[in-house]
Image (cartoon, rainbow, N blue to C red; front, side):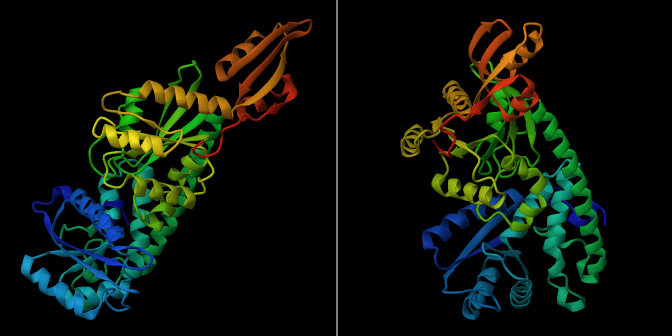
Length: 443
């Protein structure tokens, strides 16, 4: 099944904006304010997908209703609300199982979606590279497979061109693509992405051999990661004030204040409850964070809940086994809220505040990053023969020379070097490397 067939037409091509009712359910251990904050984010997601919120309904429950997720009475209330505001679609902030989705659509007489479907829809709009498109299609097909229905059961499953067309496919009422065809396509995409992952791994090994530290920018979507990369390296990466504007990693070389170069990589933004299927499909892209030497964690100080965004990013980092990678928290957009930026920096020891837009704080950030990386680097002692000036030049280029002494057999050098550099220069090493300090997260 070709990519375009799997994802349907783009929302940008629609001549109308859907009218959406948002539904949030507060379940233990969450509180009402958690639900409200999550619904505000869902509002932004729906807007990014190309639709308008026209009403909102909230319920507090001990557990989800097995049939409708919300209670039967609340479901009836939701139907009346949809009629009153002439809604096209209902979007739940919680994840619906296929049975709940089907039951809701029958009762409401309109499409029922969940948060996952909206996020997948946005990813489908913004996937441009071959790998990005394959990753999104894989996530969508995995989402669609258990939701396929036959004949009259699928009558409510499609509104031409609306949110969710990418998650449902075209003509689902006729079931043009059966389960086995979708499973074959999934298997093909998994194999295709596995090959791309091997290629990415070879590229990463090539970068490792360069001896340069790998620094990865992570953060909540729309926190300003791409803007920071552009400010530091003139990378020319798309940077827009919308969610998930960029999906594909971009790597650029950056020279720190001491002259030492590093490789700086931008990544896809995270969000609360990023769908597990999406994390799995984007594993090869997200692993750039788990294999990094250091993380630059960008946080938007102007957001309503920066602490919640920090937690959401840490949750995703834990899911991709990147929680042990040292990080520096960078509070961005300080020009929009200077007082909040100062408060957050005081609260998070070792963090810095910057404005990628104006450049304020960038010099201090680079000095801090340089100091952290220097503290982490191993101090290694090497003996370099006088006729190997190229090796000495390489040490100076790839690391920081702590001391040099000139002896009869050559130049004795103590330098902070990465593991890759130490391995490549092993024949000149005369004493074990001594790890630096301060490599723990947030120190």
